[in-house]
Structure formats: C-alpha cells, structure tokens
Length: 151
Image 1 (tube, one colour):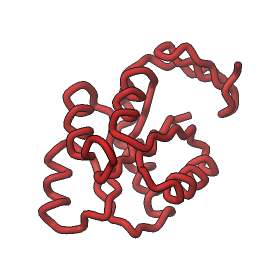
Image 2 (spheres, one colour):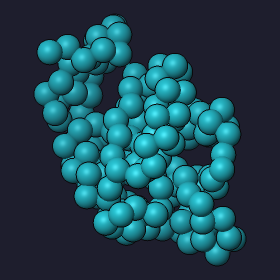
Image 3 (cartoon, one colour):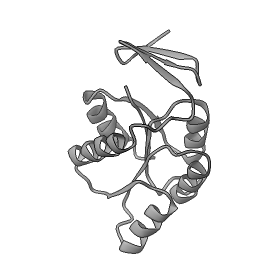
Image 4 (cartoon, helix red, strand yellow):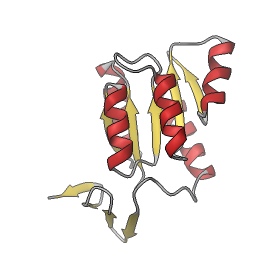
C-alpha cells in the first residue's frame, strides 16, 4: 500500500482528496503547512507528495526544493498558480507533475497512479517491508494490516 502525503491548507480539498485516494486503496497522511511536510518526509515512508504551492508558512516552491535535495520521492504540485511560467518553474524545481486548481479528483488519482507506476523502483526515505496483508515501516516503527494501522 502506497502512502500519499497531501499538503494543502484548505480542509475541503484535503477531505476530498483523502476520500478519493482512500477509496483507491492508498494510505493518506496530511499536512497543512510546509513545516509539517518536512517533518513527515523526515520521519516516515512517504511514497508520493501532493503539494500545494501556497502554504501559510513556507512556500511550496521552497518545500519542493528542500524535499528534492534529500529525496527522490515523487511530487505532484496541485495549485491555483496556472500560468505557464509557474508550471515550468514547478517542474524545474523537481516536481514530477503539475495540476492546476480547480481540478478533477479522478484525474488527480489517475496522475498519481501513473507517477507511481513510473517510479515503482523508488525507495522512500525509510525502508518499508510488505508481507502479504502487513506493511512494516521501519522508519516510524509502524505496522499496517489491510490499510489499517495496528496499535
């Protein structure tokens, strides 16, 4: 099961994306600020980041650059910045894809599937082992069974 980090300060967008991605079988974690993103990517196995560029504390561009310096984790930028210079800058910063708001959640899920298909050999920041129905994350010492965290 892939873990998707959704980074957006708009609760409604986070809720919609979480719902769609969970229905598709992804494990979803969320962050509402750049600081939270950097904490997540340092402490757990994230397989893909959906990153809004307009965050309250650190710009999404800065977050993208910092993640890219440390990791090959795929990044999909999801933002209201729709101009061609913005899209080009985002991709040159290291994003794997760029989707403009408003967006279709179904298209976003399809893009995530495509990115994960292309980066199947990607190793997240912490090692994860999948054993049948179990997923063990060595980085944050967590265990998941059928998508549910085991306490």
